[in-house]
Length: 202
Image 1 (cartoon, rainbow, N blue to C red):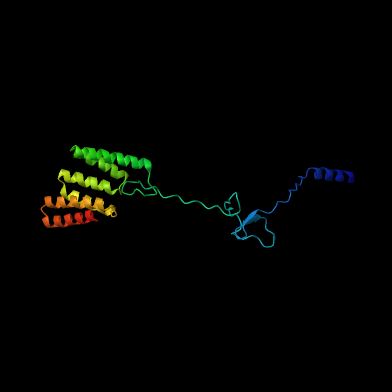
Image 2 (image 1 turned 180 degrees about the vertical axis):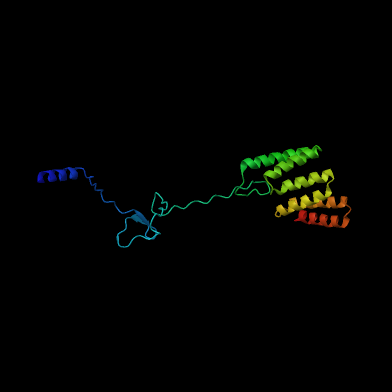
């Protein structure tokens, strides 16, 4: 009877599930935001703080250890014009397009095609809305069409944009003077003429 018991015990021990031993895992790599280094915690008795765990490492320059500086997006270039020839942001291509439209408008105006002249000048202004000469051109077209109030307002806008250009301002004041005379505002027209003469003398 005793041998039978030993035999049954050996059979049961052979059927037991094997025990697998996994290799010890290394501690999780963390990034110390304050120390600026990557590595395992030095002391298991002091677990890493929430700021240390799972912090992405900042980008570093390939030439050194300084963090990369992301360049700022440059400001969009301003379209150049003959009113602002010294602009550092002038765009030669757009400047050429604006100048071409301005010349076409001047030709239409000289040939008394005021509607075509106005439409062409408007296209140029949409490309370069701060060009004082283009607003002066619109004012001259409106004056030719008999739209005296519009001509006056466009001349004023041209003067606001071309404050440092006395010759252009004098031309605008003469447009204002003519528009005021056509509207019967003689005293205001005389004052506008005096301003034009003062600018022309200086």
